[in-house]
Image (tube, rainbow, N blue to C red; front, side, top):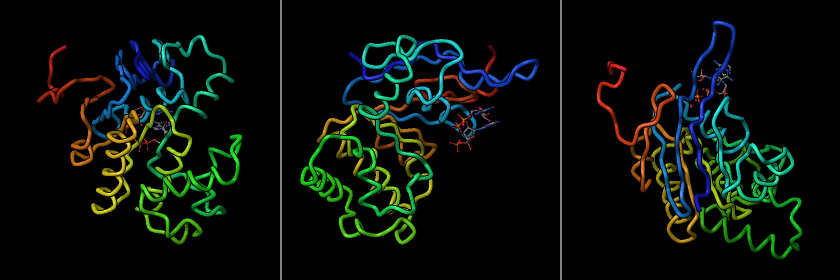
Length: 234
Ligand code: ADP
Ligand code: ADP
């Protein structure tokens, strides 16, 4: 059974003669253990689609199916439990809290989990080793590099062992060394821990780490690059 599916998803912004179709009949199935990339130019609908799959935003029409259950059949409480327990989201701009240390930021998603302090410590150490940030665990975000921030954000995204990791331009703000480190960590998560990952990027190097790459342009999805699509006749 797929981890998440988008079925005939449309997203329209605005109204009254000022409508803008950000997503146009998107169909997407992500199976367990996949590492899928979604590429497309700025404004093509990548973030909008990711927000739908994360259930942060709702489609105008169509459906999102999570582990076999339609979001149309889930109430707000069930959706928030899904987001908390099953989903890891890596944001482009990190979204770290500057008043908390790296360790505390990583532990945030487990704040409500019934785990004892030793389990929590062990989990953080394990993840910090995976992402090579053990030596900065007690520092504050304002005192670490961009690459370290992104790896902290990635650590936070996976600390609850989510069944699906959604990453929005995770290398967008990184130099190439940091980007490579993060991508290799994501690849390890996928190959060793069998994490399912969906990554939005407009960087071909980042996309080269994905096992399957889809393309989105003007809100429409393609399974391969369509040359001259801008001139394509409907
Ligand atoms: P990408 O992530 O590929 O850059 P987005 O999903 O952010 O693209 O945006 C797709 C299109 O939808 C863009 O033209 C954007 O301006 C528009 N858009 C996104 N969010 C909104 C919104 N809340 N209201 C109106 N238009 C929006
Ligand atoms: P990204 O860098 O991921 O493409 P954007 O800069 O396009 O993100 O959008 C950032 C935020 O602003 C998103 O939450 C998006 O929904 C919102 N947004 C984008 N375009 C518009 C728009 N034309 N009107 C209102 N909100 C928008």
